[in-house]
Image (cartoon, rainbow, N blue to C red; front, side, top):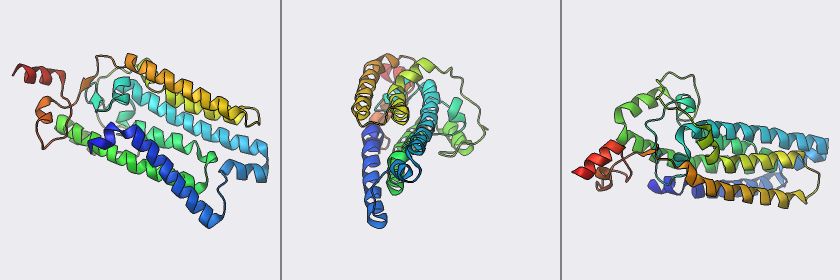
Length: 265
């Protein structure tokens, strides 16, 4: 199961593309077209309607990016980009008081933002693929949280849903969010959203597409360069060395005090 978390960015991307490809193929088989939704809109209602469709999708993607920013500001860049689960404590504040997986919920909104650029079944296939990949990552995360914070996590999961937000009923953890760390962790996400807005508002020429690709490349490089700055020492690991050597538990990390005690012993 740890594989799904360690390589979650790769598995999410692959699942998206495979699901989208399968959905697009089914769409072609039963509806005879692989044209994205915005092209159908342009054909029937004109270029302005197509632009508005793409713009509407960009607004949905922006909402997803803001949800991720909200969550990342509580987790910090180290947790967002790490290949092993980390936490500043047991985070139940901010968006985590509303839903257990706000960052992954943000991913769904971002993918929905691309609805105009896909066929209906292609979009559905991408969402299903992402849902499967994220499900296995969530199972890994929650298993580690249960090991590290059994009593607190059981209370938390009973009052906060995994995917459907609801009014907070669980006591929030005392953590101060950092929008700076959150934004550093989400630069690439906002680059994608910016590209969608530029596509909706830019000149009606295919020459803009290479520019958008370059923009995404630059944003991705910036995200990689600043990611290390976001990994500040306030982030502590989840499970300790006592779990690493125990074959009955998933490898991980522990609280700082626990690790120091284990090291002394």
